Image 1: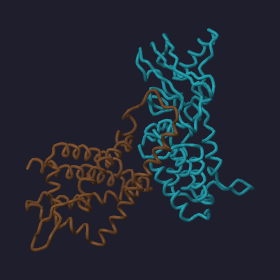
Image 2: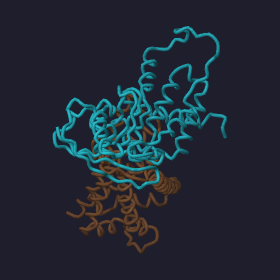
Image 3: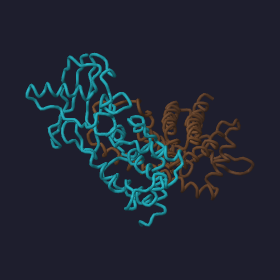
Image 4: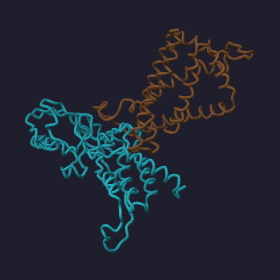
Length: 208
Length: 249
């Protein structure tokens, strides 16, 4: 979970930096050029297969872990302590992950599938033809339901990362008085900044 | 003070069990939690009823025998063992729910008594060191830095009560195993079996049906001896390096 999780965080950073081009005020030109680069560059393509595998391993491992951990306590307690000894997000990683997975399926259908196999409009910049993914995104984010779905999912991602980042280092055996406070701070920053910026995109595009 | 006790009663391992409520009208604030149970049991015996069975031994907070999941927390609201928990930690008129440790690896024997043999099996699989037979070695023959000795001692304060398992939402025994692996891994005497210890103790932990660690930190927060999460990180390191370099295929 730790290694795959950390790799997925690096993906989030790359994905976010690309997506922020959606907010560039150029009718989607820079975003469309970027989208073409991401789907045609051989290095990116190879990495994307690694990424799909990582997602699948992360999900399957999570399911196996949840099954094992649930079966370790066949009879539950009548009284539960709530947040006294552990954080809410740390106890609900599975539920948060499921919300993110549902979001991911819808998200992939909307953009990834459309980009690869759907009928997508084209745009021409300087004599070269590009898939106009920007218009697809722009259309989707005109729908308030999508905007809400994206915002709620990013909230789930926020709590998932809040526990996930620091937890990954603990699993890998890195717990040290010098580094752990730093890891925690970076983790909290990542947990807030990444989902917040992601959520900004649909909200701003909706309001435009 | 008046207390309403909601206690888990279960005749034997096969019985389904359920809660039974008892009203205690004259509880002293200075009683320990276990003494309060003694008073209840005397009363039950007088009435010819089966007393509530619970584990206890030294009653000094050092043996790790007492358990009890009190109001949703192992050993109750204070970070101590149940025998060192006093009734002054509760308010007059409180309802207190008392349950046994819940884990597949800790089956209920009767009422609040659970079988913690699985911990012994984990220790048997690696929680020991090889020593030379013969005369007693000199006390300071092997130099150990104070800091290391202190850290190893902190890990060694684990009394094996099982509160970590009881508190963990996954019923994981990682804090216990990590403390037991750490106390030996840090000292020169523990180097002989260092790799096999980490491997074998983790394997036994899995075999016994404990869950896996998801780093919620509830174990350490509820540990009466304050065993830190650094131990779990250390166990992860020990385990990874053992898996990478031990002779076992």
